[in-house]
Length: 69
Figure 1 (cartoon, rainbow, N blue to C red):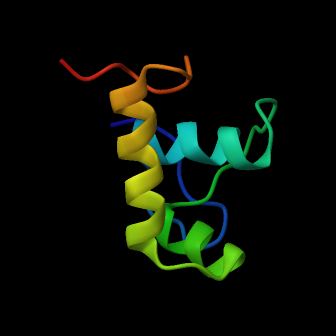
Figure 2 (cartoon, helix red, strand yellow):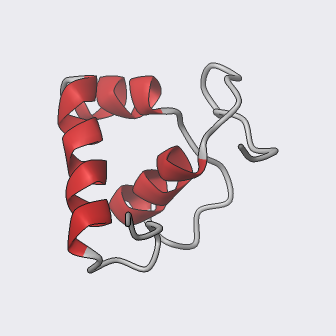
């Protein structure tokens, strides 16, 4: 859990939401959106974004996402 909140809805953000926001919208981002708001903005299903997060965790190819054991 972080101290960051979604810039659209005010929801408290998890680290994966911040990592995905930085991956999709730029690493220099200082404000972030939750998964629901990212999905709405991108016009995709939340499940698709969850799958992208899982893919990055498993692949270990992006330093923004902590590696799963």
